[in-house]
Structures are given as structure tokens and as C-alpha cells.
Length: 113
Length: 112
Image 1 (cartoon, chains in turn orange, red):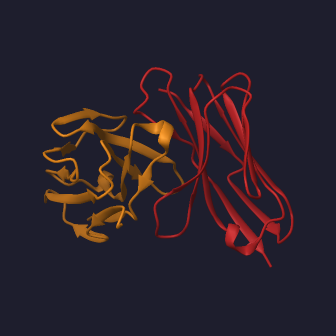
Image 2: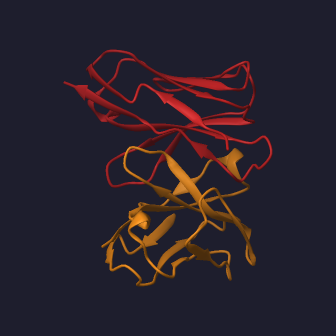
């Protein structure tokens, strides 16, 4: 099993550009999450989804959008990239929420210049 | 929102030494978890704790869920070079089980 796969691994964006960070999991997990990790900081929750067609905001949702049309995929969209969105982004999934622990992808390092 | 304070920020130890790190919160959690992150990778779950007072071991790792539900510690015994990495505590609940909060991490360096 591949687990949680994130693409791309690295990306440089110019201010105002848009992009989609892809996340897919092959474990049939219902729950999926997007986190960002800034240097020297813990992970902060951007958005999460408890199943296909259902999404909800986390701690830091501003500037991002998500969709969950299938169980496997949970893309994260940046519409107007800003330098404050320079970060490492992690996607995660779990079977039934946190009590089962999360499986994380290996991250996407995004730089906005 | 709930804030987690993790300490120490970093540790430099000799191989074979024991390590202790802890996490405190201003409010209670239902679940405490400890993750390890290697460079260029996502965090990997080490231990999950579900009940106040619970003490759980996973090999050389031992973690406890504080009786007040506002703190947790992780101990690593007889450290080895592959223990190097960043260790994160994380707490969940009590109101939204889907909003897991992370500490800022403890960066562990083990000198052979």
C-alpha cells in the first residue's frame, strides 16, 4: 500500500498565483486532514473532511479551499498565493478520527515569492 | 484556542542516555498522542493515550496521560542514534475530536 501520497513535493509560486496540492490515500480512510507546518512550530489544521462531500474548517482556513468528491482524494487549493502561505503542507488520513492515529503524507514544501 | 506547551525545545544527549520531554495545556484533552518526525517526512505515530493516568509503553518509549488531563510526558530509555528527530505531542478534544492540536516539538540530537 502507498498510504498517503502528496504531490508535488516542492513548488515555488509567485504572489497571486494559484495552485492545487494533491493528496490521495489508498487505505479507505473516511477522515482526511490538511495541516501546515511553519519553521519551529507544530502543525496547524487548515481543513478536514469526515467523508466524501463533507468538509470543515480547522484552525487556519483563510486563503485555502478544499473539496472531497471521493473517499481517496482531498485536494487543497490556494487561490491567490501570499508569502504568508510559505510553509510545509501535510495531508493525513485516519480510519475513524483521532483515536486511531493519523497516517501522514511526506509533505509539500511551498515557497511563495 | 487550546495551546500546547512542549519542552524542552531541543536536547543534545549522548547515546545510551535516557530522555524525557513533556507537554502541558491550558485546557483538558480527551486523547494525548506522541509523534516522531524524521527530516523530509511526515510525523509518525509513536504512542496514543486515551485515559487520564494511563501509562503506556512501546519498546524503549513510555508515555503517560496526566491525571489532570492537561499534560503528558514521553520518556525514551537507552537512546540510540536513530532516535534523532523531532518529537511532537498532540492533543484532541474535548469538544471537537477532529481538531488535533500539536506542540511545537522537541528536537532530539543523539551523539554516538
